[in-house]
Image 1 (cartoon, protein in one colour):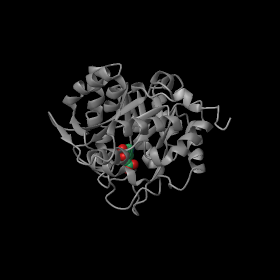
Image 2 (tube, helix red, strand yellow):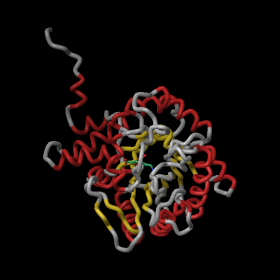
Image 3 (cartoon, protein in one colour):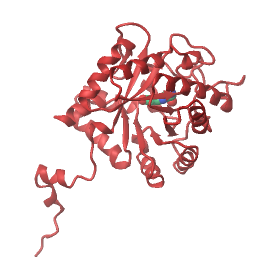
Image 4 (cartoon, protein in one colour):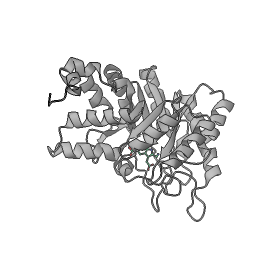
Length: 326
Ligand code: PBG
């Protein structure tokens, strides 16, 4: 008998068989949709480098919440564009700040929507850095933690469900946990951007959120793309400080890191951030007719799940949820 009798192809024979043996699922409930919120009325300003995404004013959010609900996407993560920037980023913790308004509007529109807030300084500071700076332009660690504490408490007051510190400031999870517990918000969860690399793939986001550093870069606090063992150290610290979820960011050049973090900390839900540059790449290639857009996007998201992510922050959330439903 010259031919093989063991044939894995048997399990791929029909769509029903393929579905039955699929090891990875992709579902709208896995998605977290990022929203960029700005001041003004009736604003939907397209983001040039992220086709299909816009900056929205608060009055647009009820419609957004309804659409997400009908698509089965359970959660959003909010990024705010303040009216004014200053060295401290005062609007970041103001009662009527842009994110504070957005949380209230979304919760009013749909109390079941899980509202996650990105907690960082870079969109609010005039220098565009993720913390307070000393006179040499170095990001001050502990002084920045005090600001982050004020920000999370203000988000909690407005009804946020989860706060997500993204600045890679040492001790940020413990500081935030302490502030929330001290103010009576011990039930609020912390999703830590535990493993965040100094990545070129944040380019389009920095246009969208107007958060690019005015000088220098973020290499003194974000991780070096060369390192993976260090990611486990970062994740371990955040677990010890009380993080409820971990995140790896970006996703695609870091699928191995997602896998390693998931294997080391299987007890925590793991999120991966499919970042703006990853979105822009697929959109640009698809617009040129070089990729089958739907297949490429669903394959990408499935790959991130297969690597070990339970949840995916993705600008594809709405379109992917629509395709998965049909
Ligand atoms: C910082 C923050 C950034 C992103 C999310 N939170 C930018 C940065 O670190 O420079 C990037 C997200 C994306 O590229 O989609 N607040």
